[in-house]
Length: 335
Ligand code: KG4
Ligand code: ZN
Image (tube, rainbow, N blue to C red; front, top):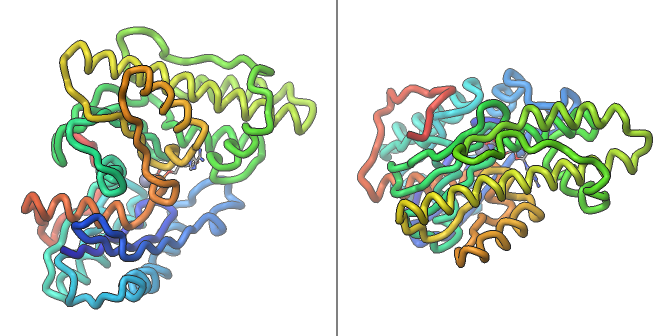
């Protein structure tokens, strides 16, 4: 089975062709970072226009890289939310038009769910598994029981993890996106130079809060006197994020043990899973519980079309198709 996946919910215009043997035949990503960089974050109107300019080129390249024609496909899957609505409308309308004009079924994909199931494309991950979803727009800890069965254990009450990386990078004048540059700086910094708070790290909640941590970084940044101070602050921030994630994931694993939920592994997905320091620390944590830790390869952690095509395949196999009047939506909760 061959599915084309189209993604346009934030600042990447992406398309990919994936088959049900988990082979990624093509994966084309046009990043809009250059368009948004001078604004320090994604500007929705600029994003929507840039998607419109590039979507046909990206989809055409995905088909030609995969050496397939539209007639070889079994379905077209497109992100229909959640995300910046202008961009979502561009990709969803393009995917629907392509499906309609080539007589293929259309599959509406939830972007968060695509991140959540992406590790099943790249690794042998069986249901149920514990998922730490950490991207620019989302931060959730869930038990994934099936393609349509998510139990949310905790979520952020304010910023997402990726948002915290981006806001900290912005206030330290390090540019956008924040994650990669903070990770790079953290390698060169002394993480003990600054002591930062761990909001909501108390028993009996698996919810997250990152806005207080960001404010603490802002206060500390005012005391920075050198470039090295800023680098040390990046290291302290990343260390604190790691400690928060470890605390919450430990609570979730203990919850699964107590409730006798036999999770197959712990999975992290979303853009923040590209952070190798975070993944290394969580791998060690999971070993303590005799659990495998799984994260997709870096290029599939951030937004991409392959994860959209893969969820298309998972939905196709469950005979879940959508009507062409499926409405694009800015919000679309997991459960
Ligand atoms: O999944 P994604 O591409 O887009 C959303 O669906 O939001 O995630 C983007 C987020 C950004 O906030 C970015 O700063 C973060 O992922 N990110 C990272 C790293 N690479 C990307 N955060 C921490 N470390 C990284 N290496
Ligand atoms: Zn995403």
